[in-house]
Length: 250
Ligand SMILES: Nc1ncnc2c1ncn2[C@@H]1O[C@H](COP(=O)(O)OP(=O)(O)OP(=O)(O)O)[C@@H](O)[C@H]1O
Image (cartoon, rainbow, N blue to C red; front, side, top):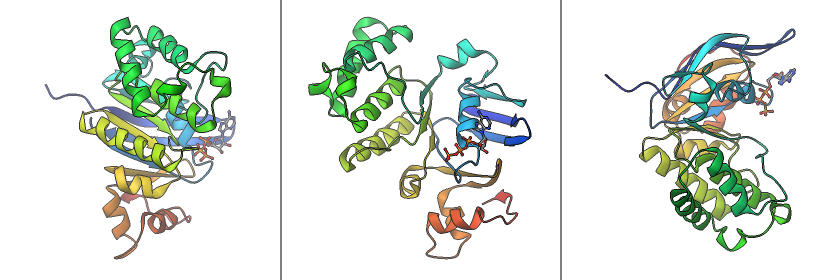
């Protein structure tokens, strides 16, 4: 039997009163994909992600993560990692305590958790700050801690909302390399960001959400070709989000 898609969505829809935030979204994302999820402010990206990570109930439609329907919350949550725009951290804990706490919630064996926490603290240059309280951390240090807690348990599917936000160039590079390493190891990364060069560099597939609908989907190269030779992903993004009806595979 072939392995299930990492992320599936069928006619996934969310309405807030008379506002349709996500309109009949279909996704079919195989394992090991880096999926760059783009869209202007208010397009529905965060709403989509919150439905896929089971934090928000869809109005209609279905979705599955690693073959588990999102209605089966316990089984889905163990298969995913999520970095929201503002990572949930306990300010009074140290970075290490925060990560140990998350490892406990994830039922990670203690030895393995300690090893993995040390490895990731080292990777993100946080080891020397690991015993300081999070309340003393800079924005970038908090962001790095949030990223580590999203990938700590090696989930097959990781959702990252603006992962390089607030990071210095070296840390941003570490995040990009980490995403590439995760994908090489068959982890699927669903990446929402406004930083298009990052998507251009690391995404296998780009999906553009505009006004609650997916208006373009395909490899970055195909999307760029639509605006002619030499076009950038930014040119392509601006072209497909200017109100024209361009719904198609790119
Ligand atoms: N809790 C809510 N109640 C009512 N409307 C909401 C709620 N959350 C989001 N919306 C609306 O749904 C639409 C999509 O919002 P969403 O936050 O998903 O967009 P986004 O693509 O993540 O935007 P951004 O890039 O600015 O973060 C917007 O019109 C927003 O006003």
